[in-house]
Amino acid sequence: MSDTSRPQFIFMRHGDAVSGELTEGGIARVQATATRIKELIGDERVVIYSSPLTRALNTAQLVKNILGAGDKIYTHAVLKGGNFKELVDLFRSLCEKHPESHIICVTHQPQCEDVMG
Image (cartoon, rainbow, N blue to C red; front, side):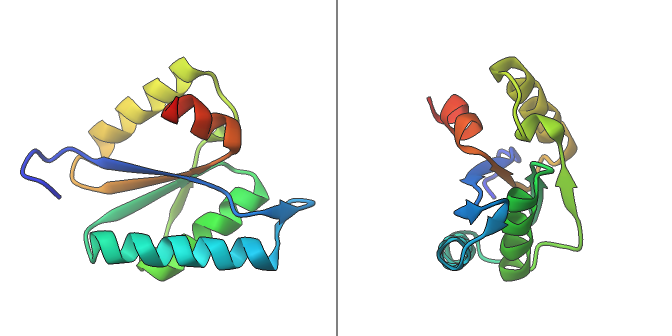
């Protein structure tokens, strides 16, 4: 982390899924993405938040396993589908809770687009 002690957010869309379950291709892409994140951040502190939907939770679990990111995945309903203001409020609260962490948010396509523009 930088000297500013501000969290860095990493937004991930869940892996490709059919009927809520990750496909083989989805699992492979999540594993490749998590491996790349591990290369970029090394052993720095990571906190994972996920949508409570199964495909997002399964994605978050794969990421957690590869990163060795503690023993808990936090869920938040706003990551399932909230409006932009709710997302901003969530991110502000996460900054206060985890000021020296990388915060990975596993969410869904619409929320990723809201955040990224």
